[in-house]
Image 1: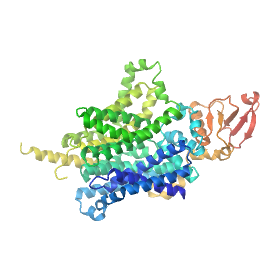
Image 2 (image 1 turned 180 degrees about the vertical axis):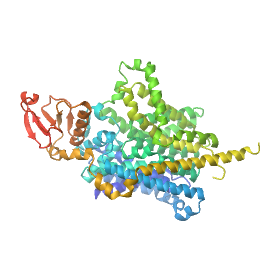
Image 3 (image 1 turned 30 degrees about the vertical axis):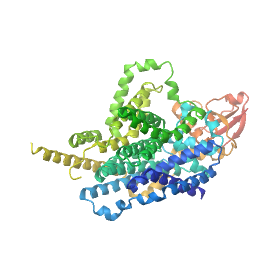
Image 4 (image 1 turned 45 degrees about the vertical axis):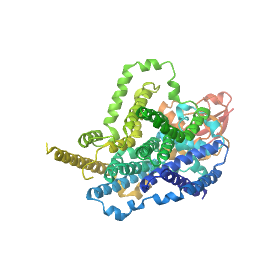
Length: 456
Length: 149
């Protein structure tokens, strides 16, 4: 009972927070609202749980704290509920659309249901997820669940190389919180969490592209991700790559809102800061994302320093609470990261000057791009041809995202160059997942930059 | 020159159509691979529910889990001669199921857990620990044996 109550309150908090972000907009698209608020509620719930747990507050009391926060949020957002434009999702509105839209909509619903079915079947077959899920993320949940007051001292003594204890707590903490309230370990919690992130990524991509361009483009963007076989497998494997990818996408969506609208700019930048910090709270690559995001905004905005400083102020204000919590976990509780430790050893200069390593990494980057997503035809060719035929522009002010991607890829590249793990093994087990962290954001950027087709 | 925009529009429509066809083809291929799962989901669930290696492996832990009332640090020993990947798999699974206890790869701790998944038996006449001051604290009938000093 208390678990259902807590889940309901957490979801309501995410919902109210999202309405608060959009309160100065003229309307709130309901699909966008839904697909942001569910993962946001999981993120907030996870961070709150760790914060209160580290403060010595029992998990059951957390429900009370969440309830107080919810009452406060409802008071703040009461007036904004009427902004939700339910009209756009009514069946009558759907029937008024053109033929192309209806074909795409049917394909979208078909592929959504098919992917949901595949997700369910895979979860029945592998309820604990794949290796990284059970041996890193869900294992840490078991420590938090089994020793809610002693886990910091226990895991600080653990072997970081085998279990990657330093990995951020987002997924593990949310699962543990649910288990504590349920009073049992259930594999359905990580499955449900992974489902929420996977399917909200489809929804957020599609609805955000539709909001900034048009509905047909929105459906196409969502369809490409839905049709990518490896993405749903990555989701039902319960890996955090989908989680971090979701928060990267959400950050770019909020920044695009901030860049396009003067009304509510501060709220969107604050929200982008929160979701960027949630990316860092999900996976170490999210920390790289935070750094690259700030760097890319600085590079693009350096000519207008006053405006840039304003932007950075709100972004950082949104990021700080969760980043402080993450820093506390990383520096005060978890043992040091194995890759970071190894990156300081004496073999680094030799690795940095070894051309064979660069050659091998470049080959893998190209090879993985070629077999990307297990498509029957390499989708990059279609992206390239469509970009040439339709043309691209920067009317949505997304040029910074290209810089962000380049910096992210450079960061990934560097981490392989200095890696202490057997390079071929490291590349073969992780590079495709790194691509997939960026893929939803790439599709968002791609469809926003693509010129409109006449009549669409 | 006047035809150029028309040509571009045709090209755009072709690219749009080809992309749609490609997506539909990809969806069909993905669905075809899983058509048997979708055609009889009840059978699928009966066939695969709780049958995966990790869930099955976890069934061995129900008794031993309740043996440790407080989180403890326990040394870990596997089957003699086990290859490295198997050792690592069994060790990680043991840590997964026995969390919040710490399962340590060191073999000189006061409490040692033997995970004899295949043989289930400890050779008491030649065992290093039994010859060096450890004794059997509890033998579970599923390959787990706890030794203590």
